[in-house]
Length: 257
Image 1: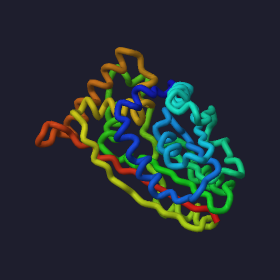
Image 2: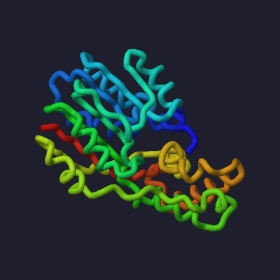
Image 3: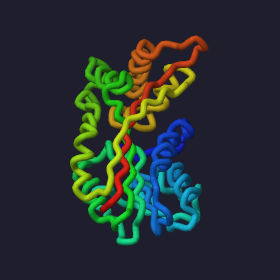
Image 4: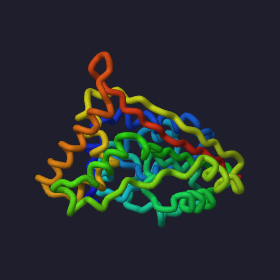
């Protein structure tokens, strides 16, 4: 895929940051030495960590140069670097590892979470949030539209939505043997957006990217018109003309033995 766009992602900053804030409220570590934000994006979640843990060394990493540039401008006192979640290992003094909406993109992420968690010292916390929305209309329709005949078919007709997340039990069973506690829960957000076009703008910054990144200008425009028409059917306006974007998310907080 092309590089991520921090500007596109931050069009809905308040709504995108809310799950990170909800996750952070469940992180209980008295005086962490080092706090690391995996997949830090433009630094909106890292900023929450810096405010919560002002005495800690705050780090964030991402694979996107555009996101890292935005994060460094936002939080010049934090340390941001390029890295991949599949190869990064926490240093021994890392007491909080925070991951907001990144591991859903990582193949076999249960194994990666276990590997990272195992490297943490006793009492450290791993806190993870992931969208669990692949069965929602936004994501089902991405795939249905791309499979339909259209000028996009040759370039993107093979693209499929990402796989469903494992069950809550799978996360619990993978982490609990080396954890003092594992807390797993779902929250369903209902984001109030202006209209169907706003829903399309939201997913253009994240889940829609694999479908539209391979497309040229005319193909992309045609796909987005067809997709938005289907989104408008699936998310009708409410009494005030707004639409509600239903968005389930999975949360995991584990404390290391």
